Amino acid sequence: MFRIRRLFLTLPTLLLLLSLTACQTVLYTELSERDAMEMIAILLQHGISATRLIAKDGSSTVEVPERHVADAVSILRSSHYPRNGYDSMDKIFQQQGMISTPTAERAKLYYGISQELGHTLNDIDGVIDARVHIAPAASDPVTGVDKPATASVVIRYDSGTTVSGLLPKIKLMVANAVQDLAYDRVSVILLPVAVPHLTPVQTEWMSPLGWTGWFFAFAFPAGYGANLLWRRFRRKPIPTTTELAIVPREAA
Image (cartoon, rainbow, N blue to C red):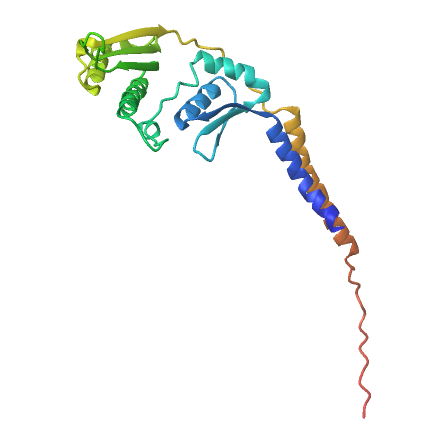
C-alpha cells in the first residue's frame, strides 16, 4: 500500500518534468553570459520563448522549444549570432610545457594583443565582428633589412550605424597598443552589413505534451487527496447521542 501511494505521488512529477524537458531543445552551448542574454532578448522580440542554463564552467546554454528551432536559428543567423569568441591574456599564457622559448612567448604576446584589440573593437556600438592581425617588426634573415611592424583591422558593422566616423580613432588605438607600430602602418577595412528586420513568429502557449503533463500533475494529486479524505471520513465513527436518565436518590 505504501509503494502504491508513493507511485501516485511521484508519477505526476515525473510526467510534468517529462513534458517540460521533451519540448525544449539545446540551440547553442558554451556561450558567454552577454551573448546568451542578447540572443534570448532577440528571440523574445520575435515571439520565441528561450531559456538560459548555466554550466559548471560558467558558460551558458540557450534552449528553445523544439518546434521553433528552425526559426530561432534563422533569426539569430540574420542577427549575426552567436558572435565570435576572443581569447584572454590569462588563457593564452597558461603554461603548457616545462620550457618556453622567447620566440613562442613573443608570438603569444602579439596574439594576445590582437585578441584584446578585437574584443575592444567588438564592444563598439554597431560593430558586429572585429578582427585584428599584427605583423611585428622583424629583420629579414637574407637581406638584413628591418621590416617595420604592421597591423590590419577588419570590421563588420551594421550599415545603419556610423562606425566609419571612428576610423581615425580605431587606427590610433591599434597603433598605441602595439610596440613600434606607426599610425600610417595600420590599415582598416570596414564592411557594412545589413541587419534585416524579421517578421515576429506567432507564439504558441504550450505543446499538447506540455498541457498533458500539467493536467496529470494537478489531476493526480487532487484526485488522490480527495480519495484519501473520503475514505477517512467514511471510516470515522459517527458519534451517537445517548439519553441520560436521572434517578432520584432514595430517601434514607
